[in-house]
Length: 168
Length: 429
Image (cartoon, rainbow over all chains, first blue to last red; front, side, top):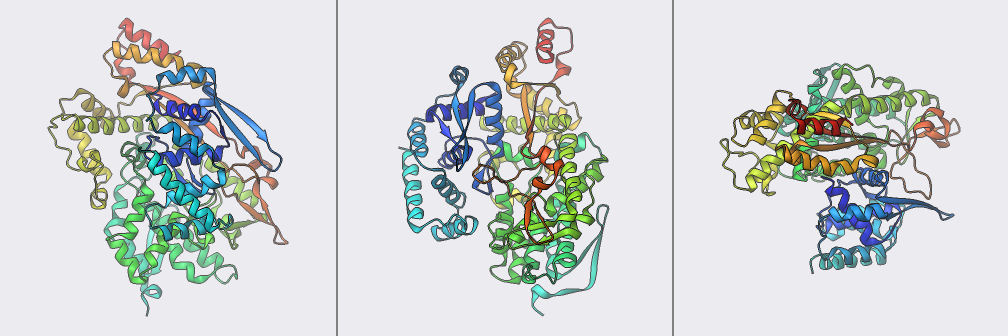
């Protein structure tokens, strides 16, 4: 009944800690695109794919005491960081076992910056298009971020890596 | 005369209870209205299950789509025309996007999408870009015109001003649905001075902004939206109907997957159950089709499917209780056990549902917000974010309100049976 909640707790537990709401949004979206079974619905927003449902679910999990939210003021920017609480760890025992590839994928995603994940997730949002059109779309919706060609190449390479890691 | 510039010999008008009249002069718009994909929207209610609470809420997405078109037409023809920031060449793409923005909605959209893991926006894109009557009309304008309209709706169009007319925190979509839903539900919330807002809208390079003197009209609009969400859109009884609707579709899917022999073969659903449907099959669905199946499934041997359909068709909805996950989640396990003991499958008869709304939010540099704010234009041309100048809006900015409910069939539990009494005590406690 709270299986979808459990998946999010499991995700944060496997990540150990997720720094930033934006980062969490993009990580879950990318995992979803790699066919990991997250149910949250996404739309294209200011920073790329965004799920109001995920925001609500995380808020509920904090209220339930399963996640701890910490606010960090980094000077030039501010962010919210998430960890699983002891209660959350107990709750996790009700969750189904994750696909064996999930921990590795989460680890790789968590190593990346929000900016990079924003690029990757936005490219994936347009993955029904061919590569050139994907890039063109990203350049339109993210025109102020000025992604370089090198970043684009890295993002496509990372997508390929994730596609392989998520099944092998 | 080129098709995109062609005007009807006589203006067509649709009588409309919200805007009084909806005016059509452009041949392209008239042809789009008469396509089968647009006419299908007559058979999809704007507010899904809300008609089971507010009996007037039978209005369709067809009406709403025309309404959004009319608002954009007025913004462009009465407000923006002649202003240097507005490119008149964008007029037709903006009008078409306004008219077609909801084209991909399915029957009881929210529930249907949830069960079959679909996205109506993707269907809108497909209807615009694949072999449909709508596509044919748009292609007559120019080969790349269907893609342009799709890009506006997809929010990836190069001219952000056009996108913001249809998709922003103060857009034609919201302005129509708030007023239309208020009118048809009969509630006194949802009303605001749209005439004033239209008069103070100004085009800029990136988005529509509001002249500073129109701030109070915008405050009223935001408060209307806030009230409509909690009084109408998140009404606990229409959420109960939606919960049952979702469970019907889940049950039918489960039965199909487990080889159950339906008395009434679910022909229209089979490709969705198998996740192998085509656009044509999606377009063939409407609320009439779903309700017909629900009527027929009331006679099925599967007692859960028959009961859930009867509940929906005859409005025997689930009762609800407040549910605070922070302190009550533990009792869930207990309730699941008790429901099983009582012979009620908790998968279908014990359901939690949460609603949440953020009435207005703004972007703070360095923070993680995802919304484009509303800007007020000062006399000297400078822009200021709305909540910096409005105390009313500032008070609700960034404040999310959430409501959790637990739904259950009270009618099956009020028979004095001690086990049922125990369940009710837990649910109500």
